[in-house]
Amino acid sequence: MLTNGSLAPDVVLEDTDGQTVRLSDHRGREAVLVYFMRSTSCPICNRHVQDLVRRRAEFAAGGVKVIVAVPEDRRTAAGWKARRQVPFTVVVGRGGTPHELFGLDRKVFGSMQQSGSVLIDAEGVVRHAHGATLPTGGYLGKEISTAVGALRP
Image 1 (tube, rainbow, N blue to C red):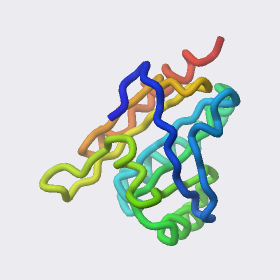
Image 2: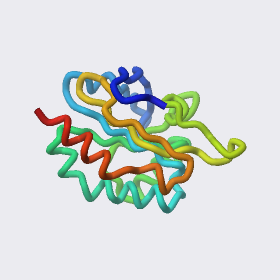
Image 3: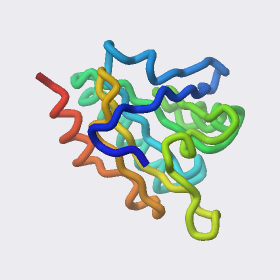
Image 4: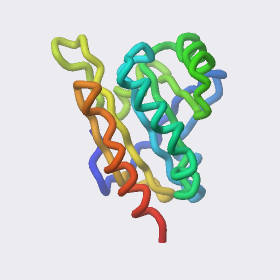
């Protein structure tokens, strides 16, 4: 998992339309919050995404683009995004999951995907990084709000 203050890797992902999404494309323009779902079928992760949707204005005011990363394939991710009417970019990995690229592994004998979040400022520096094996611990809304608030000059 990434650590606060470290430079974020130049990760290349793919959105539900098959378009390339590079985190480095946001450098110098906006901060990025990536929320990593355990799976699109996880009810707790879905509640976390609903909270992100409710807080869209807060993120926009902080100059933060929200991206939701899922471990499934693009077709599954696109169907989930449409059914849930998720307004954010939803990404999958290329040759692996987005989770693996950020150090969020599968725990408990490789059966449980970790979830979590990473906030990267406009300069590409990690300002919040958190991962958890249990989905109830994968989203720290108050900590994310504090980190987003600290981005403002």
